[in-house]
Amino acid sequence: MPTIDDLRVKRCYICCEEESFDEPSDPPRQWVHPCRCTLIAHTTCLLQWMQGAQEHPSRAANHSECPQCKFKYVLRSDRPLLLRFLDSANDTMSTFGKYTVLVPLVATGLIGAYETGKVIVEVSTRYGVWAFKQMFGEQMFSLILTRDPGNWPSHARLFLPMIASRLIELRRPGFDALSVAPLFLAWSATPPARGPRSLWSMLSNPWGRRYEDSIFGPLVSWPPSPIMVTALYPLVTGLYRLGLYEFRRWLLGMPSTFPILPTWAAIHGLPPGVAALGRPADGNANQNVQQAGAANQNQERDENNPAVAAQVILYRASFSLMRFACGSLAMPAIANFMGSILYRLADRSSMLYRFLAIKPPLQKSDIARLRKPLLSSPDGIDIWGSLKLIACGTRAWAESDPVWWRNMWGMGIFCIFKDGIELLHLYLKKRELESQEVADRPFDGVDINELDLIKRPHPPLDRPATN
Image 1 (cartoon, one colour):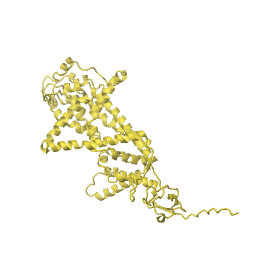
Image 2 (cartoon, rainbow, N blue to C red):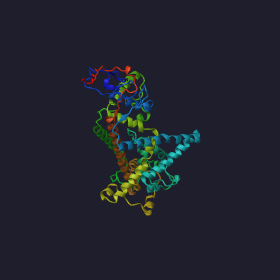
Image 3 (tube, rainbow, N blue to C red):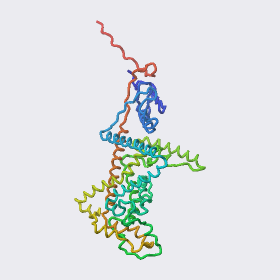
Image 4 (tube, rainbow, N blue to C red):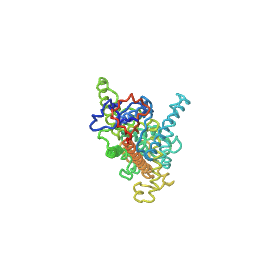
């Protein structure tokens, strides 16, 4: 049965390059006949073509079959048990995220367009209350807000519904300082609940009002004040992302200019080069189209790198809008769970106990003392007192157990662990692509007359010996 080595001239059906048996290419390239028809290809060309097809939704289902005879290619690769488990878990979460989108759509249709806005505000507010409890603890919730919405300050009705959208914003690559305001800044300056009141009314006397320093928390304290956390957040997260990028590039052997898929570009399936360019400005459409074409060419060259190809495949397979949103909205529960683990570990480590600044729960007498009016008159405080209140927070915030501090660190540890799992998945996927090969087949079932075979001399037949 003839094989690919018996062909006189080989022609790759992908790149259309030809190679004669008496003039082999230098350096030599591997050829493969993977199907039941006469098509043959370079192994590298075929693998790259399959990877490119897998990244397009319209071609992904048929990425590993012959375009002519529809034969399913037989692929061999190093796919350990851990990689199969990670792929399965990734597919399960993606499927859950896709079907989750049906719930709000059906609910919207049942409720009707008129009531949808009210329901969204109500659901967002209830979620904000739940997230507040998870992040700051039940005692701080009872001290600042209480279960009676009539005791809430006016700004709570603005900030609580915003928490859900701000959590989603925090997971985007760019940092927006306003995203942290509903999470920290608004509550640290909120006095304990005593009845309907407004934070703005307390800060409404810019021309001066006497007040006692005992109403403020300390400016320098441990844990740091929320304003300090807000100021350091972009710096810390920026350094972490830079370090993670360099470590990933070193571990995977990626080129220094490999494309990083923005979250929203990955959700919408846009090529990284085009997504980075954005919408064309008026008068520069042709120039932007040319830049987009050049970016796509660079992207195609970069995808020849197994690490870059693995990254694109995983992003396309895992990202969906609902999965992204669900992951963001689950952050308070994850932070609370990780913070509770740190709280238990602090019982065995005095250093961790001091670092987390754990304090005993407030007694009834402490709560009664903290609920006393911050000012002897409702006229408010001056502008300097307002700035100090925002920077230091109230005394209630300073004396309470900083549940938010250990929850924040717990969330950070979870993010590092999550990034490590994703990096491991990416590394194993890269190794799988590097080891991937297509099984070669003989030309069985093909008419030999259709093949341009090498004319080899037939060996002489053995004649029987004569006496």
